[in-house]
Amino acid sequence: ESPFGAAGIRPGDVVLEIGGHPVNAPAELGFRLSLQELGAAVPVTFHRAGDRQTVSVEMRAAVRAEETLDGGPVKVTGLGPFDGVVLQEIGPALRDRLGLPADRGGVIVLALDDPRQVRNFQPGDIVAEINGTQIATMEDFKAVTEAALADGKRSWKVVLNRRGGLVYLTWRG
Image 1 (spheres, rainbow, N blue to C red):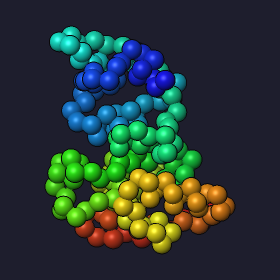
Image 2 (cartoon, rainbow, N blue to C red):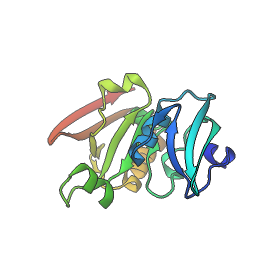
Image 3 (cartoon, rainbow, N blue to C red):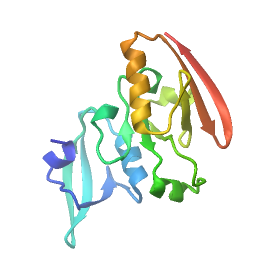
Image 4 (spheres, rainbow, N blue to C red):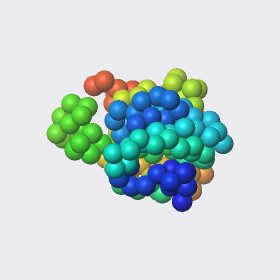
């Protein structure tokens, strides 16, 4: 069971605040969660059937990409240079909200859980390619990163689309 489910939050409830900060869009939910410390009890305010309620939610380690349901934000853990990055597949609703062209797909960086990641990634970066393979979906992302880990890959080549330009990153471990 998820931390939200364990705290009594159910499907259909609308999360209004996390840790006293407003949540105005689905992407903000992932961002606000990414700022919380693991093990902390965080107040979460939500709306259910006309009532505003607040519960305490214990923050636990995020799921890996393959465990994510319904295309929502994913806090990546244990996947090479992407550790601590919050990603989401670009679907029609997100594409419209971000004003991206209709043919633009892929996986977008929503937030960074680890401040050290700011030197590599920025919110809004679109992951275009990993180790020579184009990334169009979270399934592509999962397949490429897991294959790299299974092969004992110690170097990563990532191409990002950042504000219309390409950024090439390389890690060696």
